[in-house]
Image 1: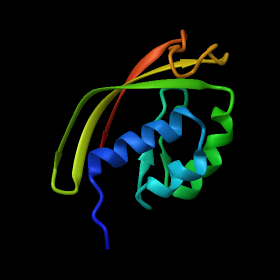
Image 2: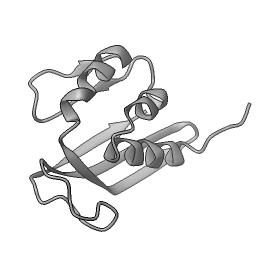
Image 3: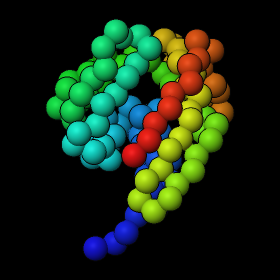
Image 4: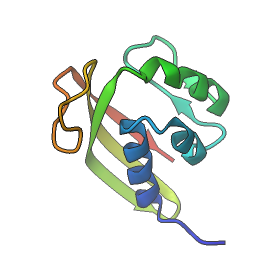
Length: 108
């Protein structure tokens, strides 16, 4: 079995999420994961519930910046700045959405 770099997995997750590749995002999640979103009042728990949540994000364009990331063995912790918009930026490769941003902390 090939061992994967946990920081590379976080970068892959960010790229998949920012580009709405929901199946890929789900494939990277731990079965017991919990997702929080400042736009909803309760955390979303488990892969099935998270997969059902993704269609609500289809018109939200995100650009995620890694503020801090550290890993030890298979565990990684990251602090992410996520900027959101409800209109697609002209060039998603270079344009940052202009909507509100929030800082997300993730670890596993």
